[in-house]
Amino acid sequence: ARTHLAEYVRNYTHGRTPTWGIVLNEQNKLIGTCGFHHIAPYEQDAEIGYTLTKAYWGRGLATEAVRAVLDFGFKQAKLQRITARITPDNAASARVLQKLGFRQTGSMMEYVPISRQMQRLDIYQLDYFL
Image (tube, rainbow, N blue to C red; front, side, top):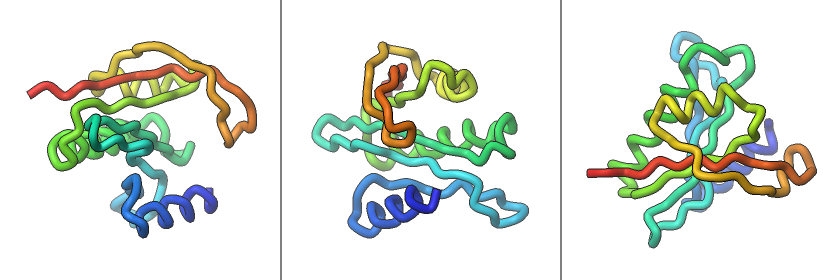
């Protein structure tokens, strides 16, 4: 987790891929992150990613965070398409995306550094319509 946070801070410092902390207001405690990866400004396209500490799963917090970042992406950054990639066994994450209007558009094999292996990832997409 510290490695990921250090990478997010480095990226933010250099003006790349915005990632925000998910903070539990009552305790001012960092419980996750949500932000964009692989921004393609000319295509007005980005990939969203999010993580949440397991103790806070199932409370709607990931949905709330992703909704806020989508709002920023579509309204402030003027993105036209946002994608997400998740492992097929991550049903909770699929529900978050589906609740927010994403639809599954395919799947792919990709090397995932965290697991250090090739994994199938399901691709979800949300397009912005004026």
